[in-house]
Length: 97
Image 1 (cartoon, helix red, strand yellow):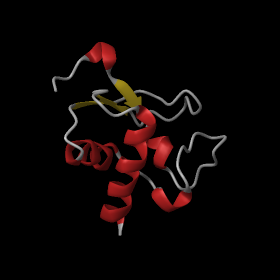
Image 2 (image 1 turned 135 degrees about the vertical axis):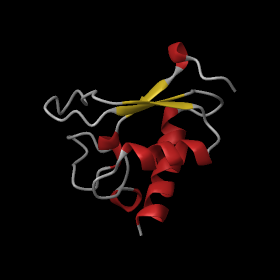
Image 3 (image 1 turned 180 degrees about the vertical axis):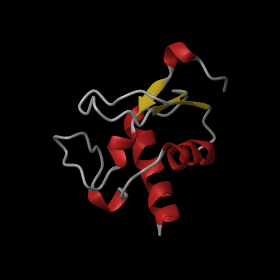
Image 4 (image 1 turned 30 degrees about the vertical axis):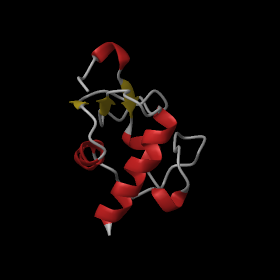
C-alpha cells in the first residue's frame, strides 16, 4: 500500500504512555503501555505491521501543548486506528522489556 497523506491517521506517543491517565490521552490498558514511549519505537511497530508511515517532529499533542514530542502519521490501509494502536502497543511492550 502506498502512503497517502490525505488518508493517514495520526498516532501520538501519549497514547502509549503508562504514566498518563485515560483523561490525559492514554488509549490503551496499562498492560500495553510503556514508560516514555518514543517515536522510533512507534515507527518500528508500524514497520512490523507492514504499514507505511512518516515521522513528524515538533508537533504537540492537543492535550499537552507544551510538549513537542511529535507524532507518527500512518497509512490507514485495511486496519482501523482502533485496531492499529493495540498492535503497536504490543510491539512497544515487547521491545521495552
